[in-house]
Length: 304
Picture (tube, rainbow, N blue to C red):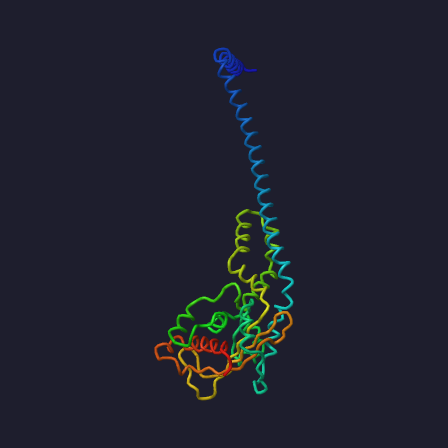
Protein backbone atom coordinates (compact mmCIF):
# COMPACT_ATOMS: atom_id res chain seq x y z
CA UNK A 1 0.00 0.00 0.00
CA UNK A 2 1.41 3.42 -0.86
CA UNK A 3 2.61 5.36 2.13
CA UNK A 4 0.46 8.41 1.25
CA UNK A 5 -2.72 6.32 1.26
CA UNK A 6 -1.70 4.62 4.50
CA UNK A 7 -1.20 8.03 6.11
CA UNK A 8 -4.64 9.27 5.05
CA UNK A 9 -6.37 6.16 6.41
CA UNK A 10 -4.47 6.45 9.68
CA UNK A 11 -5.41 10.12 9.98
CA UNK A 12 -9.11 9.30 9.44
CA UNK A 13 -9.01 6.55 12.08
CA UNK A 14 -7.27 8.86 14.54
CA UNK A 15 -9.82 11.61 13.93
CA UNK A 16 -12.74 9.25 14.53
CA UNK A 17 -11.10 7.96 17.67
CA UNK A 18 -10.66 11.49 18.97
CA UNK A 19 -14.32 12.31 18.12
CA UNK A 20 -15.56 9.31 20.07
CA UNK A 21 -13.20 10.03 22.96
CA UNK A 22 -13.79 13.77 23.25
CA UNK A 23 -17.60 13.88 22.43
CA UNK A 24 -19.14 10.64 23.71
CA UNK A 25 -22.46 12.36 24.59
CA UNK A 26 -22.97 13.69 21.05
CA UNK A 27 -22.74 10.18 19.67
CA UNK A 28 -25.17 8.87 22.26
CA UNK A 29 -27.52 11.80 21.52
CA UNK A 30 -27.61 10.90 17.87
CA UNK A 31 -28.52 7.34 18.71
CA UNK A 32 -31.26 8.67 21.01
CA UNK A 33 -32.66 10.91 18.28
CA UNK A 34 -32.64 8.07 15.78
CA UNK A 35 -34.47 5.88 18.29
CA UNK A 36 -37.09 8.59 18.91
CA UNK A 37 -37.61 9.11 15.18
CA UNK A 38 -38.10 5.39 14.73
CA UNK A 39 -40.64 5.23 17.54
CA UNK A 40 -42.44 8.31 16.19
CA UNK A 41 -42.67 6.72 12.76
CA UNK A 42 -44.13 3.56 14.24
CA UNK A 43 -46.61 5.63 16.32
CA UNK A 44 -47.64 7.67 13.29
CA UNK A 45 -48.18 4.50 11.29
CA UNK A 46 -50.36 3.09 14.08
CA UNK A 47 -52.41 6.31 14.19
CA UNK A 48 -52.84 6.32 10.41
CA UNK A 49 -53.97 2.70 10.41
CA UNK A 50 -56.43 3.36 13.26
CA UNK A 51 -57.75 6.49 11.53
CA UNK A 52 -58.21 4.62 8.26
CA UNK A 53 -60.04 1.78 9.97
CA UNK A 54 -62.28 4.24 11.80
CA UNK A 55 -63.07 6.09 8.57
CA UNK A 56 -63.94 2.79 6.87
CA UNK A 57 -66.24 1.89 9.77
CA UNK A 58 -67.95 5.27 9.41
CA UNK A 59 -68.30 4.83 5.65
CA UNK A 60 -69.80 1.36 6.09
CA UNK A 61 -72.17 2.64 8.76
CA UNK A 62 -73.31 5.47 6.48
CA UNK A 63 -73.67 3.05 3.58
CA UNK A 64 -75.78 0.68 5.68
CA UNK A 65 -78.02 3.47 6.97
CA UNK A 66 -78.59 4.87 3.46
CA UNK A 67 -79.31 1.45 1.97
CA UNK A 68 -81.68 0.65 4.81
CA UNK A 69 -83.63 3.89 4.30
CA UNK A 70 -83.73 3.31 0.54
CA UNK A 71 -84.85 -0.32 0.84
CA UNK A 72 -87.55 0.55 3.34
CA UNK A 73 -89.08 3.09 0.96
CA UNK A 74 -88.57 0.90 -2.09
CA UNK A 75 -90.38 -2.04 -0.48
CA UNK A 76 -93.27 0.20 0.57
CA UNK A 77 -93.55 1.55 -3.00
CA UNK A 78 -93.92 -1.90 -4.51
CA UNK A 79 -97.47 -2.17 -3.17
CA UNK A 80 -98.59 0.85 -5.20
CA UNK A 81 -96.33 0.33 -8.22
CA UNK A 82 -98.61 -1.81 -10.45
CA UNK A 83 -101.60 0.50 -10.05
CA UNK A 84 -99.68 3.76 -10.45
CA UNK A 85 -97.68 2.46 -13.41
CA UNK A 86 -100.94 1.59 -15.15
CA UNK A 87 -102.45 5.06 -14.87
CA UNK A 88 -101.21 6.14 -18.30
CA UNK A 89 -103.21 3.21 -19.73
CA UNK A 90 -106.23 4.57 -17.88
CA UNK A 91 -105.65 7.92 -19.60
CA UNK A 92 -105.59 6.15 -22.95
CA UNK A 93 -109.06 4.82 -22.15
CA UNK A 94 -110.43 8.36 -21.92
CA UNK A 95 -109.80 9.07 -25.59
CA UNK A 96 -112.53 9.56 -28.13
CA UNK A 97 -115.56 11.80 -28.67
CA UNK A 98 -117.88 12.83 -25.87
CA UNK A 99 -121.10 12.09 -27.78
CA UNK A 100 -122.00 9.23 -25.46
CA UNK A 101 -120.74 10.96 -22.33
CA UNK A 102 -122.79 10.23 -19.22
CA UNK A 103 -122.21 11.95 -15.91
CA UNK A 104 -121.40 9.79 -12.88
CA UNK A 105 -121.70 10.80 -9.24
CA UNK A 106 -122.81 14.07 -7.74
CA UNK A 107 -121.79 16.88 -5.43
CA UNK A 108 -121.62 14.59 -2.39
CA UNK A 109 -119.36 12.15 -4.23
CA UNK A 110 -117.02 14.93 -5.32
CA UNK A 111 -116.88 16.44 -1.83
CA UNK A 112 -115.91 13.04 -0.45
CA UNK A 113 -113.32 12.37 -3.15
CA UNK A 114 -111.37 15.59 -2.62
CA UNK A 115 -110.82 14.67 1.01
CA UNK A 116 -108.75 11.68 -0.10
CA UNK A 117 -105.17 11.67 -1.36
CA UNK A 118 -105.34 12.66 -5.03
CA UNK A 119 -103.19 12.48 -8.12
CA UNK A 120 -104.02 15.09 -10.75
CA UNK A 121 -103.40 15.40 -14.47
CA UNK A 122 -104.77 17.82 -17.04
CA UNK A 123 -104.28 17.73 -20.76
CA UNK A 124 -105.67 18.70 -24.14
CA UNK A 125 -107.94 16.18 -25.87
CA UNK A 126 -106.04 16.67 -29.14
CA UNK A 127 -102.75 15.81 -27.44
CA UNK A 128 -104.33 12.76 -25.83
CA UNK A 129 -105.30 11.44 -29.27
CA UNK A 130 -101.68 11.45 -30.47
CA UNK A 131 -99.44 8.41 -30.31
CA UNK A 132 -97.78 8.47 -26.90
CA UNK A 133 -99.89 11.45 -25.93
CA UNK A 134 -101.06 9.95 -22.63
CA UNK A 135 -97.48 9.29 -21.52
CA UNK A 136 -96.43 12.83 -22.44
CA UNK A 137 -99.38 14.40 -20.63
CA UNK A 138 -98.71 12.29 -17.54
CA UNK A 139 -94.98 13.10 -17.49
CA UNK A 140 -95.57 16.85 -17.86
CA UNK A 141 -98.52 17.13 -15.48
CA UNK A 142 -98.59 19.73 -12.73
CA UNK A 143 -101.05 21.31 -10.34
CA UNK A 144 -103.23 24.21 -11.44
CA UNK A 145 -106.15 26.31 -10.25
CA UNK A 146 -108.72 23.64 -11.10
CA UNK A 147 -106.99 21.11 -8.83
CA UNK A 148 -106.41 23.51 -5.94
CA UNK A 149 -109.94 24.96 -6.08
CA UNK A 150 -111.51 21.51 -6.23
CA UNK A 151 -109.67 20.50 -3.07
CA UNK A 152 -110.30 23.86 -1.34
CA UNK A 153 -113.25 25.57 -3.06
CA UNK A 154 -113.57 29.37 -2.94
CA UNK A 155 -116.19 30.89 -0.68
CA UNK A 156 -118.07 32.59 -3.52
CA UNK A 157 -117.83 33.58 -7.20
CA UNK A 158 -116.66 37.16 -6.73
CA UNK A 159 -113.66 37.75 -8.95
CA UNK A 160 -111.63 39.14 -6.05
CA UNK A 161 -112.34 35.97 -4.01
CA UNK A 162 -111.31 33.74 -6.90
CA UNK A 163 -108.11 35.73 -7.44
CA UNK A 164 -107.14 35.29 -3.81
CA UNK A 165 -107.93 31.59 -3.97
CA UNK A 166 -105.83 30.86 -7.05
CA UNK A 167 -102.89 32.55 -5.35
CA UNK A 168 -103.01 30.12 -2.43
CA UNK A 169 -101.47 26.67 -2.18
CA UNK A 170 -103.77 23.69 -1.83
CA UNK A 171 -103.38 21.11 0.91
CA UNK A 172 -99.98 19.67 0.05
CA UNK A 173 -100.53 16.42 1.93
CA UNK A 174 -103.38 15.19 -0.27
CA UNK A 175 -102.91 16.69 -3.73
CA UNK A 176 -100.10 15.66 -6.08
CA UNK A 177 -99.41 15.82 -9.78
CA UNK A 178 -99.37 12.45 -11.54
CA UNK A 179 -95.84 13.26 -12.71
CA UNK A 180 -94.67 13.27 -9.07
CA UNK A 181 -95.76 9.66 -8.55
CA UNK A 182 -94.13 8.62 -11.83
CA UNK A 183 -90.93 10.36 -10.74
CA UNK A 184 -90.83 8.20 -7.60
CA UNK A 185 -91.17 5.05 -9.71
CA UNK A 186 -88.33 6.25 -11.94
CA UNK A 187 -86.17 6.83 -8.88
CA UNK A 188 -86.66 3.30 -7.62
CA UNK A 189 -85.86 2.00 -11.10
CA UNK A 190 -82.61 4.00 -11.23
CA UNK A 191 -79.08 2.92 -10.28
CA UNK A 192 -79.27 4.74 -6.95
CA UNK A 193 -78.86 1.59 -4.85
CA UNK A 194 -75.84 0.44 -6.83
CA UNK A 195 -74.24 3.87 -6.50
CA UNK A 196 -74.63 3.69 -2.72
CA UNK A 197 -73.27 0.14 -2.62
CA UNK A 198 -70.13 1.05 -4.59
CA UNK A 199 -69.45 4.50 -3.07
CA UNK A 200 -65.96 4.70 -1.53
CA UNK A 201 -65.91 8.11 0.11
CA UNK A 202 -67.98 9.64 2.88
CA UNK A 203 -68.64 12.79 0.86
CA UNK A 204 -70.22 10.77 -1.93
CA UNK A 205 -72.39 8.82 0.51
CA UNK A 206 -73.46 12.03 2.19
CA UNK A 207 -74.54 13.45 -1.17
CA UNK A 208 -76.53 10.30 -1.94
CA UNK A 209 -78.13 10.29 1.52
CA UNK A 210 -79.09 13.95 1.07
CA UNK A 211 -80.71 13.09 -2.24
CA UNK A 212 -82.77 10.42 -0.53
CA UNK A 213 -84.02 13.04 1.96
CA UNK A 214 -84.68 15.73 -0.66
CA UNK A 215 -88.17 17.25 -0.12
CA UNK A 216 -89.14 16.82 -3.78
CA UNK A 217 -88.31 13.12 -3.64
CA UNK A 218 -90.09 12.61 -0.32
CA UNK A 219 -93.14 14.33 -1.80
CA UNK A 220 -92.97 12.09 -4.88
CA UNK A 221 -92.80 8.99 -2.68
CA UNK A 222 -95.82 10.24 -0.71
CA UNK A 223 -97.68 10.66 -4.02
CA UNK A 224 -97.52 6.89 -4.50
CA UNK A 225 -100.00 6.56 -1.63
CA UNK A 226 -102.74 8.42 -3.53
CA UNK A 227 -105.83 6.32 -4.18
CA UNK A 228 -107.72 8.58 -6.61
CA UNK A 229 -106.62 9.95 -9.99
CA UNK A 230 -108.37 13.16 -11.01
CA UNK A 231 -108.22 13.76 -14.78
CA UNK A 232 -109.20 17.00 -16.54
CA UNK A 233 -109.40 16.93 -20.35
CA UNK A 234 -109.83 20.17 -22.29
CA UNK A 235 -111.81 19.72 -25.50
CA UNK A 236 -110.84 21.98 -28.42
CA UNK A 237 -112.92 25.16 -28.72
CA UNK A 238 -115.31 25.46 -31.64
CA UNK A 239 -113.94 26.92 -34.84
CA UNK A 240 -113.77 30.70 -34.83
CA UNK A 241 -113.79 31.10 -31.03
CA UNK A 242 -111.35 33.78 -29.90
CA UNK A 243 -108.58 32.60 -27.57
CA UNK A 244 -107.46 34.71 -24.63
CA UNK A 245 -103.85 35.73 -24.02
CA UNK A 246 -103.16 32.74 -21.74
CA UNK A 247 -104.79 30.26 -24.11
CA UNK A 248 -108.24 30.12 -22.52
CA UNK A 249 -111.36 30.10 -24.68
CA UNK A 250 -114.96 29.00 -24.34
CA UNK A 251 -114.86 25.19 -24.51
CA UNK A 252 -115.98 22.00 -22.82
CA UNK A 253 -113.94 20.26 -20.16
CA UNK A 254 -114.24 16.66 -19.00
CA UNK A 255 -113.49 15.83 -15.38
CA UNK A 256 -113.03 12.20 -14.39
CA UNK A 257 -112.06 10.64 -11.04
CA UNK A 258 -110.64 7.11 -11.21
CA UNK A 259 -109.82 4.75 -8.39
CA UNK A 260 -106.08 4.10 -8.64
CA UNK A 261 -106.21 0.48 -7.51
CA UNK A 262 -108.94 -0.65 -9.91
CA UNK A 263 -109.37 2.06 -12.54
CA UNK A 264 -113.06 2.27 -11.64
CA UNK A 265 -114.81 5.56 -12.48
CA UNK A 266 -115.84 7.33 -9.26
CA UNK A 267 -116.97 10.65 -10.69
CA UNK A 268 -117.48 11.99 -14.19
CA UNK A 269 -118.72 15.33 -15.43
CA UNK A 270 -118.59 17.29 -18.70
CA UNK A 271 -118.98 21.05 -18.27
CA UNK A 272 -118.54 24.22 -20.28
CA UNK A 273 -116.24 27.07 -19.32
CA UNK A 274 -116.35 30.54 -20.83
CA UNK A 275 -114.02 33.40 -19.82
CA UNK A 276 -116.38 36.13 -21.09
CA UNK A 277 -117.46 36.94 -17.51
CA UNK A 278 -113.91 37.92 -16.41
CA UNK A 279 -112.90 41.58 -16.30
CA UNK A 280 -110.54 42.80 -19.00
CA UNK A 281 -107.77 43.47 -16.49
CA UNK A 282 -107.88 39.94 -15.05
CA UNK A 283 -108.41 38.17 -18.38
CA UNK A 284 -105.01 39.30 -19.57
CA UNK A 285 -103.15 37.01 -17.15
CA UNK A 286 -105.65 34.91 -15.17
CA UNK A 287 -108.32 33.87 -17.65
CA UNK A 288 -107.69 30.12 -17.51
CA UNK A 289 -107.08 30.05 -13.75
CA UNK A 290 -110.24 32.03 -12.96
CA UNK A 291 -112.34 29.91 -15.31
CA UNK A 292 -110.99 26.76 -13.65
CA UNK A 293 -111.62 27.98 -10.11
CA UNK A 294 -115.15 29.07 -11.01
CA UNK A 295 -115.88 25.63 -12.47
CA UNK A 296 -114.56 23.97 -9.28
CA UNK A 297 -116.92 26.11 -7.21
CA UNK A 298 -119.90 25.26 -9.44
CA UNK A 299 -119.13 21.52 -9.33
CA UNK A 300 -119.37 21.63 -5.55
CA UNK A 301 -122.80 23.32 -5.64
CA UNK A 302 -126.09 21.37 -5.65
CA UNK A 303 -127.60 20.81 -9.08
CA UNK A 304 -130.47 23.24 -9.82
